[in-house]
Image 1 (cartoon, one colour):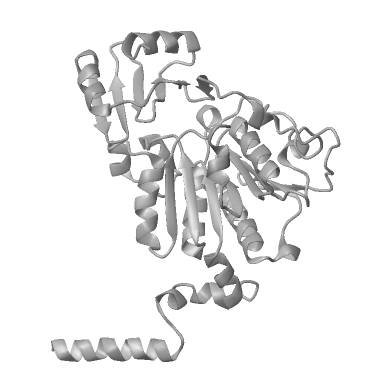
Image 2: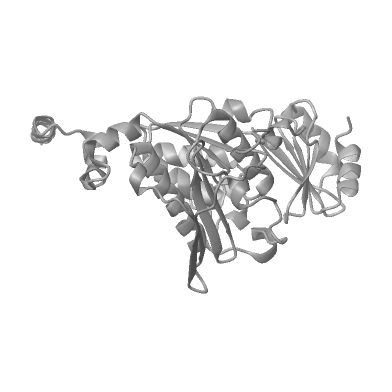
Amino acid sequence: MNDDLSKTTEITRNAAAQAGGGADDERYSRQKLFAPIGAEGQRKLSERAVCIVGMGALGTVLANHMVRAGVGKVRMADRDYVERSNLQRQMLYDEEDAERSLPKVVAAESKLKRINSSVEIEAVFADVTPGNIAQLLDGVDLVLDGTDNFRTRFLLNDACYAHGIPFVYGGAVGSRGMSAIFVPGETPCLRCFIPTADSGGETCDTVGVIAPIVDIVASYQAAEALKYLVGDREARRGTLLSIDVWNNRQHELGSVRARPDCPCCGLREYPALAREAETTLSLCGRDSIQIAGHAPFELESWQRRLAPAARSLKANPYLIRAELPGGERIVLFADGRVLVQGTDDPVRARTIYDRYVGD
């Protein structure tokens, strides 16, 4: 019986080899049948590298598409960990990830490697700042926006235009979403379409979001990414697309020219890159304050230090999460960042930080 099984396996392998096949040929067979990609486009995808910044709702869909499509290298950067509130729309995470408070990039990397082991996947668990953005963009052909705030989007926009790297923007809140691809030297930048970071105060944490709009926006982003990566310039969309999936509305904003006074593609000042890294940052709509600047934490010793003062405490190799007597939560990350949750008051957050962390 075993001999028969071995012979059958060998015959199958030989047939695949004679047909010029293989595991990857079978994996991408339907994608290569799509004429605008084809075998040549698939080869190009395998040689390309992308960076996804933000591994929340948009980022997980983007990473899933890029890895399944066979993009050669996918770098992911995110500062956050998985919580139960993420599971409604962040497709790569599950209840075990939330229970363990795993960093999103760590949980995503584990899932994605099981989806496609031939893709090089790099997980970067860090806050994206002017100090590390150049390193994140090093060696990539395209940047995909999976963020949830314009502070980071403008940083990506400025860094991409400074380094000549295309940037695929996406955003979603409620039932509405927007998407566009910005190519240095060919198109205006994000600042030309959206000059300020004023979003009217609406975020996913204040007005909610439904999963379908996330999937739609990220799929539009992924489609533009594939067009760029295979070199199909004529197929690329040259507009900023706006969709409201609940109220059945769709609008495209085009014919926007680069503004001569644009600080990015006009004046080439790239203000987000010149900005000092903020040590205290309010995370919009999340009732959380991030405080940076501490030396890296030795988590085992800090776990022992915080345990007597905490109502409950969870830890993993990446972070410690402690519930405090006053109802707030403090999260210590190995890289030295601290998240104070349960307040949007920087003074209160700093008081809690000083009480439990100190200098």
